[in-house]
Length: 430
Image (cartoon, rainbow, N blue to C red; front, side):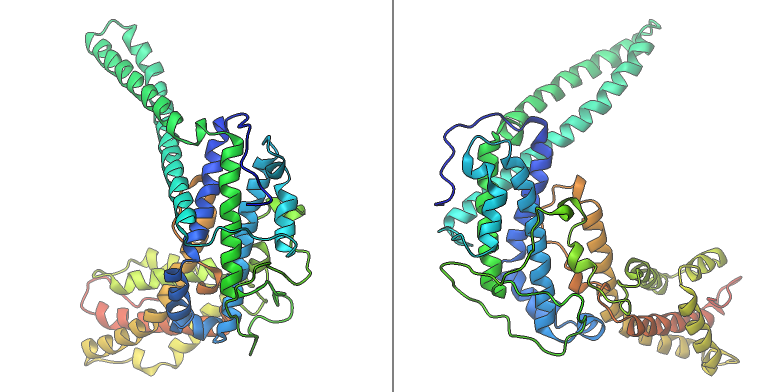
């Protein structure tokens, strides 16, 4: 890469910073895999066209793709920011000023280099990063295990002083295990990022940053202004087509990761772009996802749900949704005064609820998955592709979502009323 010569002086090794570097590498590997042909095909043909996303979020494919592009780029910005911080400790001048280099790349001033996404060279670098991450993850687990064993050693020292032969034998066995564990840690340090230099690691990640950036631009086109304040459900937009620029150029815009928000939450701009009339804009995405998944669990349960469980579930609902459910139940004459045909009615209501959950539950699942992936990002070394906000309840129309949830809860209430007549000490779901 013209802007970045191969580092001549390796400088210091990462040491304890190996773990943070491994997490950054994991994020880059995840991004690399997320923009593969297979994943983009799944995004276009399965995720965007799924009933839950199309009905609740938007039927505008261009808008949804712009959300995906923005989230990919913001995630890449976060990774590039970490590489830039690492670069400050490098001896190579190009790596030391990687923050400026990345800004020039995004501004279209700098060529993105010769290495192409999917090329043998790129795949080789990804495999190398995967091996380093795996070894560093093993080192992390071994260090944690050693810490637990050392706590046990201190306790057994006290027991050994009581002159108990059994305690002495156990203590000697533990000492042997500690020696093996420390030897394993030394081996892990040799093959992991712990023993790699700042220059080599930053150089490897910087090149992958450039490859992923070029790939995103080729898939979605140059970065355009994301319509965060103007609208959440656009009716139309420019077709996002692939391009093959030699020099990647972008529209002028301040989109720096090296500003005040660089240490803020991931995908902050996309996340906070949801309008108040959306589920995410109302701060209810995870709450509604849990309601949906709990309802699905209760529907699949073969036993009656206790009064405490029903009350706890009911308290998960905000007041306006409670009102909707009560209103629907009061108007539903089929849920009252029925003496015959309970099994048939229960089956009918069950089928209706299952049909709604068929398209709503996957969106709820992805909502919980998205939250978990971001919550545990600081402690994980998982390099698998992650969920995107567009496939969650975050941008879902709140009115449509609440109507669907209300239908599920009314149906579930009726199913429990009709089916629970065959159980002792079971009453209506609400």
